[in-house]
Length: 273
Image (cartoon, one colour):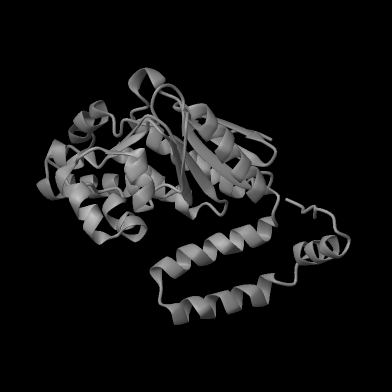
């Protein structure tokens, strides 16, 4: 198995769990230009690697991520510079779309993605975790939609995904004020599923949840993620039609046979990758 070369992330796989670690601890895991590309590379690899059944994303060092690297923001003007104002603006639009796509790779990945958040999760970090299937944090974690304090509108997914997770009114409050909110509030809002006492307990607990998911039928897990994401963006009737079509194609699988036989024999099923 060949791992992709990554500059800002560490990627490993064990017991069918792909672990992505944000690895700029000396910069509070600030999201540099290279990191955005690395995220897409890592999750595209996880998507196409059969042995990876579930992914966990966490951060090395004291923080999950302090958000977009200010040096990257400063460099955008040079990156899109052009004598023609129209072409300059079109380049900027394409840059924003590319950054959006980098994080969407987590949502696009067929495997469930669990975010394990400790310390700071600020700005672009909120964009990132909104693309995960589930979010968990340690008790000292804190969050902020910080873009408003930088004089900009968040543009990489927070304002589009977060209202579907915690509700419109609270998103407006947090996005308009940029205020910091803590782990207990994040859980009350429904942003995180569970709060663990320490970063160590967080990673241990999230890995156990990942192991539980990895033991299930990979085909059924992929179908379940596909249906949940589809249902979020489509009417109920369309979603029901899609699952009918999906299961007409995928239901009669070796995984179904294995699960049924294992149930009859009162043993744990063993599924192929």
